[in-house]
Figure (cartoon, rainbow, N blue to C red):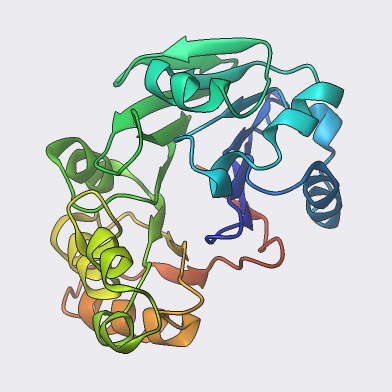
Amino acid sequence: MEICSIASGSNGNAIYVGSEQSGVSVLLDCGISRRQLRQRLAKIGKDLNQISAIFITHEHFDHVKGLQVTCKYHSVPIYLTQGTWYGLRRRIKIDNCRIIQKNEIIQLADLTIEAIPKSHDACEPIAFTITQNQNRLFYATDFGMPNEAIISQIKTANIILLETNYDPIMLENGPYPHYLKRRILSPRGHMSNIESAQLIRDYASPQLSHLILGHISENNNHPQLAWQEVQRVIAERNDLHPEIIIASRYEAGELIRLHY
C-alpha cells in the first residue's frame, strides 16, 4: 500500500492511498484545487486521471474546496454520508455521489475502506480506515473527542494520520475570538497535541510503523512543537517506536510504501 499526505491543514486536506498490486487508488478528501492536486500528485509520480474514487470526511470547505472542479473533469464516484451530502448540495454541484453509512465497508479491488463515526461540528462526519493485505491505515482529523470506534481503529492500525491541531497555551494566548477558541476546545472541535499523543500512547499497537501528524494549526501550534510533544508522550511506551512525520499544508509529503 502507498500513502501520501497531499495537503493537511485548515487551508486544505487531501490524502492519497493506492495499491501497487491492483493499481486502484483513492483520495481521502479533496480540499485543494484541481491544479494543486495535479501538481502535488505529479511530484510523487501519480496522476489525477488514475484516481478511482474520492472519499469525503465532512462538508467543511477545507475538505471539499477542489471537489466541484475536480469532478467536472474527472468522472469518479464520490463517497460521502447523507449528512455530508446535505451539507454540500446547496454550495457545490457534484455528480456521481455514492451515499454511505457510518461503519459501512466499501470494497474497491484490494482496498477495503471503512467509514468510522467521529465527533465534529459537521452534519454527519466520518473518519476512514483503509486496509490492503496486512496494511491498515487510519485517517482521523477534525474530531473533538475520541469514541470507542476511533479507539478501536487506533488499536489495529499500522499507519495513522491523526490530527494534532493545537497547543492549549498558544490557543489561549492566540488571536482567535473567544467563541472560536471555545469551538476548538469543545467535544465537537479539534484534538490538541497532548490529547492525540495520549491516544497513541494508550491504545496504539506495537506494530504501528508510521504516525503522521496532521491538520496542524498555523496560528495555534507549530510543527516542531507538535512533533516534540508527541515524541515525549509516546516515549513512555517501551514497545512503541513509529516514525513520526509532519503532514505539510503547503506540499505533498513523502510517498510511504508499506510491504506486508
